[in-house]
Figure (tube, rainbow, N blue to C red):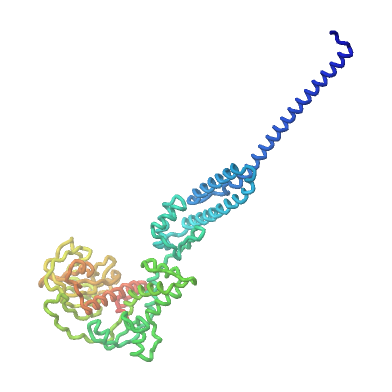
Length: 501
């Protein structure tokens, strides 16, 4: 059937409209797709930017971390990043509400590590640049440093310190946040300081029959430094001196006063070093003062060696009659030590040395075989043995104080002009004189003699012990005085060997 023109136009119109509508619908669909795609891209970009911003909150703080802190810093960052991703995965719509709190906790932990790292770096710099020659490093510091050098992180350091038995002290500690608190200490000689102050104490006159019995003779008058303020077993006290000499009263200074002044008023570093050097308890209270227990322990230790500087010097005395000892006793008999200064010539030797006192005694019950070395045994003319040898069938006859040179060998003295030898005299030492029958003498240093014979000083009575102690003290005093006297320009021989007060 033929279509009319009008119908054709009408039909064409409908067809074009449908096509246009179709095209419009298609275009609208594509636009929506594009819009949705753009929205998706924009959302993804926004999400990516948000995640980037979130991740920045868990970035490592700027700056290098100390080797002991870095492992913990890295572990902490990984831990918080894992928590962040878990939070986002479990709560994709609301996780942002918790990110701020999580980041704040991260910052707090990192601040602790940053402070610890800063202090550790400061400690490394301080110990690397300090003068180690003049610094004092305590036994506790040595424990710390060993653990510190071997540690790979903070936990291994703490474990190493616990294993070593390290405890904080006045020099080195750990703050509550774990950083190191270190105060360098300048090395000092506390014992030398105490001794110097004791030597400033003037000696005072004192009369004591008790002391006379201890030293093996009755004493009318002696001069000494009081040891304590009140009567004690350590020695003569100010109280006892005041009873003998009321004019002096309680104003006499004592060794105990020096020790208390040291503990109360010396720099804490010096007291700490004394305690550390002698493995003593050093604990302070909240005000920084020694606790009562530490004070007593350190004081007792100092008094234990300082009391010898009482240095009693006999002014007028007489030797107590010797009481024969039972035959079966091995202690022997001892007279009193006789301080003196003079030329000493061995009976069998052609050379002379210088004597500063002697103690005659009969001690060895039977002859002995005693090894001798060139370093500690000398012939009758005061020369060292040519080589190690065994002295056959010898008995000790006396202990004598002899002048020695810087090698510890008895000096040779020209009896016609002793001053020629003053350059060689540096100190005084104790020697045991030995003799085989009526043969020549040998002179052996007392330390090596006592170490190889079970006769000498075996079950010593109080008298022998006191006399040997007096000789040792006298030798020590001479060692100090001779060195000081040699420092005086133009010193004379007589001034060099003058007896101590």
